[in-house]
Figure (tube, rainbow, N blue to C red):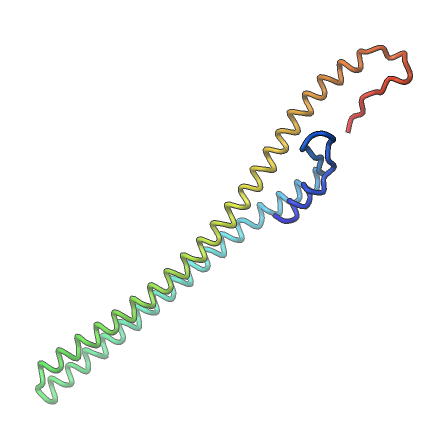
Length: 171
């Protein structure tokens, strides 16, 4: 984006207008680079989303492991000591703890993925706006060029016998 802005800012200014002429191959090269970069950003967002999903899966596996351990402990307490009530309470406590921890991990992964995707969206929007501005500028130049070509035709039809009459110059 900075290179595109620089290309436009350093373009040749037309007197008494806000228009500039830019080097077309350089501008087209920059647009090609932007087209290549945007899919890379999307791949990065997909990779980050996949990583977030992996964190969620690990948290769920850990929660399941904790629940299984709690069930084992509860069964042990019931079998060995006959403390049904204590085993049930301890099992519920461990399950609740596992669920809270799993939810915390899931929420953290979701927040991280959301923040990365929001930042990526901002960059993509900026890129799209710059592209739209560049296209609008090029369309405006094309419109002025066609108007200029119409005026040039009038100038060429003027008396060509006078040497000091300035001739239109095509850029």
